[in-house]
Image 1 (cartoon, rainbow, N blue to C red):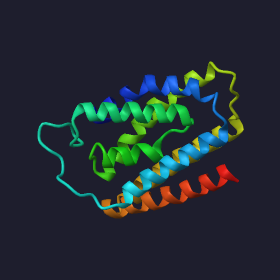
Image 2 (cartoon, rainbow, N blue to C red; image 1 turned 90 degrees about the vertical axis):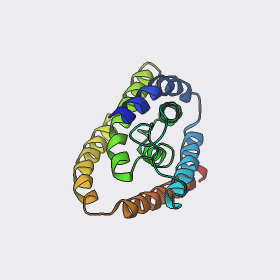
Image 3 (tube, rainbow, N blue to C red; image 1 turned 90 degrees about the horizontal axis):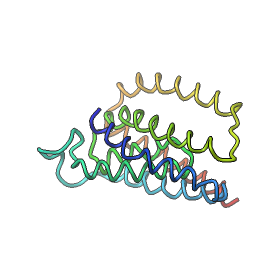
Image 4 (cartoon, rainbow, N blue to C red; image 1 turned 45 degrees about the horizontal axis):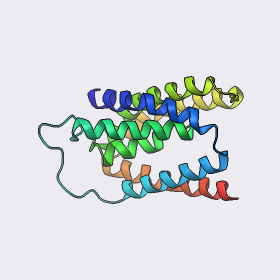
Length: 183
């Protein structure tokens, strides 16, 4: 909770500011930017972790509070700018930068995503952007149902396998998004 709260709180203002700025960027450029960031995050998730584990005197994830806050602020800005909840990027950041175990990162990311998404949404509602609730509502409902089922399935998979599966899925999504952005 402490790590997730700090990570999320640090991202609120950057998410709001970046959300307001993103309306000036073409959708294709935003999609391509997200695809490139997702590919980098996927590669980091797929590479075996080297170096020491969590150190004493640090937060629950093993990273100093300053690193958690900086990473949270950066991801908040990306979340607001790209207009996505950030889960594809938050989980890899929590695992590779903050050093949370994969299972803890998945749960912590839900807090971070909720806070950053609400901040960006509130800012976007103040811009001349329209929201397609016919797409948003079913997508949100499906995501909630998927999260419940994913929790059950994640308990049956090792942390290392879960991290590899997440990295591979993220890389596939990044490739398809990049192809869509340039096509």
